[in-house]
Length: 360
Ligand code: IMP
Ligand code: ZN
Image (cartoon, rainbow, N blue to C red):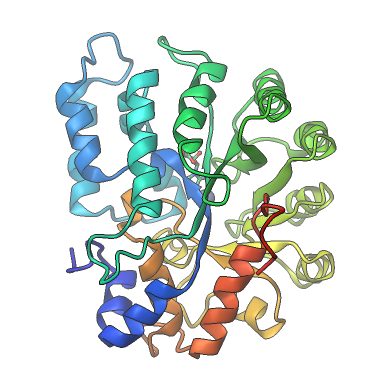
């Protein structure tokens, strides 16, 4: 771990900057729009939850949880994106009750939104966070209780700082997807801080035509829609076009778009959530030089720089911005003006821009 509490690509980029450059990045108002709750739990809290957990009635035994934590502590080595999904059962065993889930949510919100003790003026990582999570029914809570536990923590912050996106997993069957979208709509109608829905999970699972009705319902209810799309080279053209036909407001990754699909994205102006470290570690981008962010920068297309999963990727939002500013090969070598413009694009792509504040 570097002195910034992170490791790997983002740490190296941050370490190459002057103190003044780091301060410039800290001062930028940044919106974190793509962060998965259970993928962003601080490792120290996960360890504490593991020490306190009674896993006797859990499907995942304490040996599996212990091994999972050791793997996360050491820094995961992923050979392909599928290795990544195997990390979650151990984490899920530790956030299976409303109390532990609330504790995890509080820590994730604090990590992004509270003053950073390492920053000279306590600047937080993010000015604004749209946290996303997939509601799970467990022995101790229903999906609605899951979302209520998370929302109670999100709503401790003002709407100008935090909101919730409800994720649907590509592995869900129709009845689960219907329940999850129904809950997102219902909670929004009850005045709770749900601003959007997401599609995530194993990028090759599920038939996307089956999900169309659920995203239509979310849109009709005024929720924002973001979709993980074209995350791997094995995602078919049909899969990508089907997802684009849902008219999403934002796209997660959008890594392997062919020219047709990219034109469609350019013309409908959907913001692309870019997760540099995530793509490098999951080996869906071979280098920064080859990263698809370049297409979007060249086209001046809206993007938002995001962390995805700070727990396995050992990154933070400051480090992701350092990857923009640092000189090649550690970073993309963008100018301060470019980086400022990118942070403004992230703020402008929030699902819920509070009415009293001007668009950035
Ligand atoms: P949760 O939704 O709070 O449980 O966060 C973890 C979940 O997010 C994982 O089980 C995956 O389904 C999903 N997830 C996290 N990162 C990615 C990604 O890069 N691609 C697709 N799904 C992801
Ligand atoms: Zn993601």
